[in-house]
Length: 119
Figure (cartoon, rainbow, N blue to C red):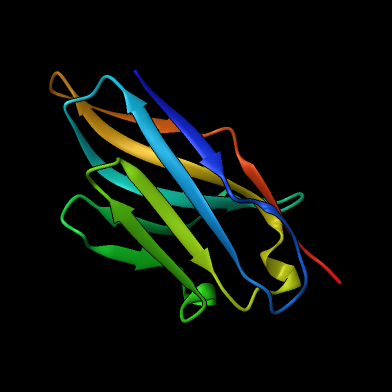
């Protein structure tokens, strides 16, 4: 089993920056993919960005040029640098990790960290 610990959410003014981090620990053979999802009030959880074990990245179009995802494979962490934040970025952000354990690909979620962009 893998546990995820998220940090970095909070309240920020429009135009500000935040950095979310997520650390994975526990039992696994190899991490396949790490990413961040956002769930705004009364909306479904949606993918914001993810990064594969090979370093390939996806960033949702609405945040391209403002958000950057990175990964430290040695520390099993994934970070989301969020710049030029807008009120519409307000959401609970969830870390998502897909990992291999004994031949099975397993998905797990963090507890969520709230990001509020408001003046």
